[in-house]
Image (cartoon, rainbow, N blue to C red):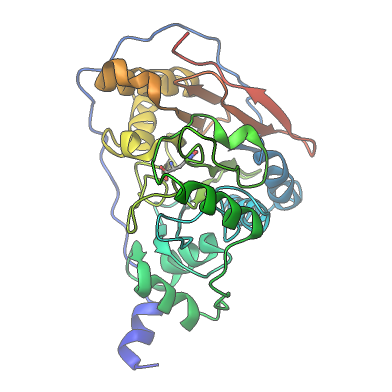
Length: 345
Ligand code: SD4
């Protein structure tokens, strides 16, 4: 490896402290719910029903007094290794038939790393962590991200769709339309065949936030993005501040759902900033969802977006645009699945 590249891979970027900036024009709360507050630590929260297994993986580390960053990496690796419709190499491909993966990770010191449009690598979350820890950069994409992963010793997996993804892709090719169906994430662990009306497989993501026994916060997010997306499309999941944000002095937030609508209002960063202004995690998630609803107007009914959040004190919250979002919460070894509150009735 050339020495310059070696230097890049081993020198971490310096991190500047960030000042609090008040947000203007916050939408009114749609309703007020009591915070879902275990006020305890360690804890881990993650999106969708896949979060149950992921939380179990994270708890092995958190329950033994380990570091939140290790927990959020190990936790979502469980999902990346499962054959799911929308996370990892078994997931649905883009419209050219190729699985491309997005992931990011953030620690308790504003350290962050991410990869986007990464192909043929089983654990994008671990590559994102290497970007954070071994380069001065935050985000690597496409062939460059793959080159970095291989240089870091990650095996290049075969370019092959899982049997379920292959079937779903062939179905989708029959009419090649993209019509997201909300909450496909909870329809099972396998890629979902396409129905007659078009492509019901849209997206799924595992996003995870953890607070460890020492009070350190970290977060992770990993996805294949939208099924049958345009080649090169990147969603919110690998975008720091959109799919994930962690501020150790305030709290952490992560998003799932229609990534474009999370990016356009810097979703997870917005949730954390609202918490900085004094909102509970629950109220902050509600307000961010309400803001997306206000931006989208009537089109809000066609999408799903949800946020999860944790304050540095260990209060948790979650809120979705539509019914059907659930999340896994662990404050002990046994995770529980919670149906999220939502905005549109
Ligand atoms: C994306 N936000 O790529 C991801 C997908 C997702 O539940 O979260 N689906 O837009």
